Image (cartoon, rainbow, N blue to C red; front, side):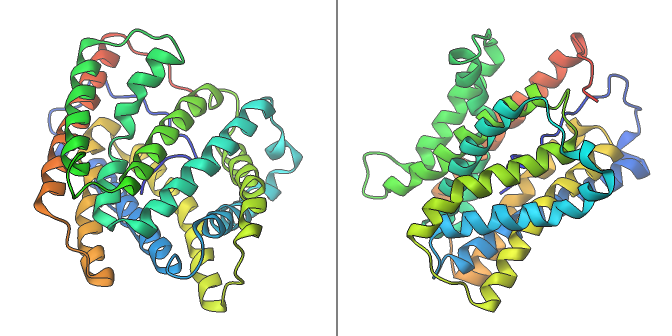
Length: 315
């Protein structure tokens, strides 16, 4: 799943895109990196399901955070102590606590639910910005956000089918994860103005490692060498996702890449069938269509609003 939790991405939409932007080399490069982001993200989910057949979700979360921290250190050490300097230690703590809970919920979701179904629920993350903005930040919620939120909620109901024999309580896990990831994104937007990206990435990995360590001890099973290899790939992959995202957004306008986020569902369906013999029902794809349409509508309505009232891009 592409969470964006490890490293916040602040993007500025182009206000005067060329008419033939979709033919440009930059656009093609952006599409390549966006699809690669989705591929790496789903590959990480496959690894999680694989090691989750024996290891507990809390232990998997701990190693994911730990190896993510280890693999980012080589990029920070050459910068000296300034790379570790932070002005928002309090927000780093909040990000770590929320992030550890979010990733743990998501890991358990992957263990107990089909890959494609978890991926569909991950698409609901933008829809949770509305209740967070309304209840926690006291922001005004626009009509377009209400429409997207209501339609997205209908899509969720289609997938989980409450009140039927098909309903599973574990379906609430990825929804909880999506809500917490939305909170993380809100925090990231407050921090990205003053904190470097590597600093944000490192302290998130460090904080979540510490937060997950004690719970992991209670369910500890010593990983095999093969499992350690895959857990290392999981942590490194989390950082690689962010690199691919930056490459994509550096190549072309972010709004033009929004639809390619949903290639995750294609990869998740394919890998779920190949590696775990999972074949989601048509109702899951119907709900996915409603959720994707809602988030696309929300993305493009926000894009139009940003063009009318552009905000300065964080550096």
